[in-house]
Image (tube, rainbow, N blue to C red; front, top):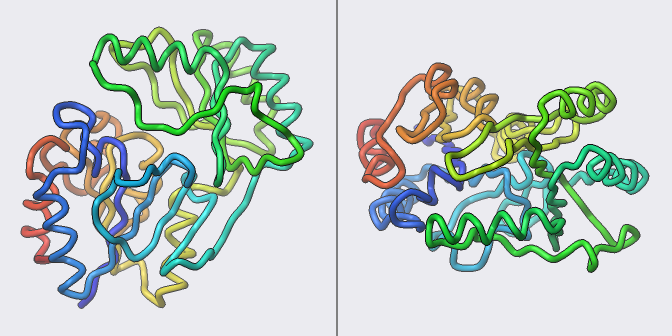
Length: 270
């Protein structure tokens, strides 16, 4: 029976630890699985504008962008939701008020404040790799033209984030990712309420006339939690967060090893 496989990008398909690319074995596994009649769906927190050309050197059957804010399949738009412009204006004011660094991520363009560009340069000095995002400065941002799906916030005060969350909880959810070794700030994603990877998966299942029992999901971070809990088989990468490993059905090897190929074999997908 055909399966539908939902795959996160960063830290799952795209290794950020050793090779900073999709492994050849992963590409081979995906190509073989599709040849066997299984469907491969990208399911990423990245908005479409930040899935760069050449980043994923294989074909997929569908794409869930912005952690559920935009869906495409076979080149057709299935679903798209944006942060209302009225809210966006007020949110930006609050980001500045609480001294959050921020990215505004959209279908066509993404924008960032100076902190994010400084962070990119600092991370490059430490890791030797510039993060793979297409970002424009806020000077280029025009509210009336913007189509923003979600935001990423960088913050130092958890109390400030808590206050911000309380103010906006009726409309938006913050998914906290914590702090990486090289970071001075914590990070979280701001998502429209009831828009997440699982909401995108359910819409994709309707489109392909498939059911939850046919689903397999691969992820590594906390914005993958709902996806792994919903999927019939939820798989956390070995480089994933400890909380996600606890929630997963299976913990496989890390993204810098042939872990996805090995799991596809174990699951009889190839």
